[in-house]
Image 1 (cartoon, helix red, strand yellow):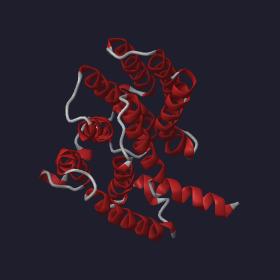
Image 2: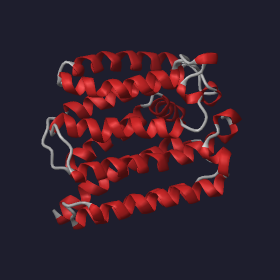
Image 3: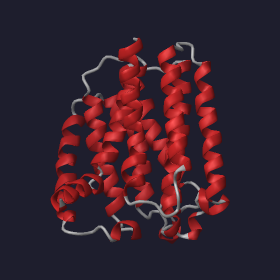
Length: 275
């Protein structure tokens, strides 16, 4: 039993689960816009997410992860190094344009972690912007770049999808902000720190209303798109309101991070049922 738990913890702490969530959102974009490709960018984003998240989490060890630094750190370093090699391999498989599009988002990830600003600050320590940096980065990697990678231009439906994805990512980050209330410095001025837990949930609910409402403005609107968006809105809402300051160890790190994977599963299921 301990062996299974150790493997599961390594799966979470090594950022494999969150990387699957990133890859799921990339695949979701390709399926939504019926983009046929060989999954190279999906694999590219998966290994890139492992490298990026492990860099952010472990480059400067936070209180949140300090308790988890056990023998698994060696395995995480090996995993990250192997994924970096694979990431470089896939970098030669995608176009130069795709790599150029990624530069701003890679730069945000580095600036998020490395203290390059006055008083040795990084972007994560700048008051009030942490959650929005993550939203911009995830949106860029999972929607904007995949569309440009395959299509080369943006239509109105794609712009709506970009806005929706940003709103969705901000909402699913709110449970993490609530969880981290006991760890985050007050100077960060996160949303729960500024307005409290209940108002944070109300704020997230309002964002989900906008997220759902934007669907009706899409030109290529289908029953599958409507039903899928309604279902993932309900799921996100349930997890948002089910979040507490004191929660189980895996509530955010596994269940909330599974929401993008659930979204992909729902879309595939709806497409198979209704075409």
